[in-house]
Length: 73
Image (cartoon, rainbow, N blue to C red; front, side, top):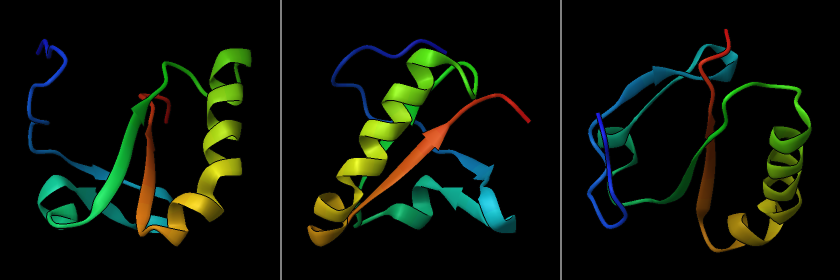
């Protein structure tokens, strides 16, 4: 599937940490950031994840959740 900037996010349902599941329909009406990274524990991905981690207090204060997605198990 190919998306271009401005496209609506396709529906998704995926496992999350702690045995949870995250879905687009479950997030409906909530503000969230959905970001993708190719592999965990790599320099670029760690910087990106750290930046979101540092911003969590500010984002959370505005009711924004952050979801990071990787194909890593």
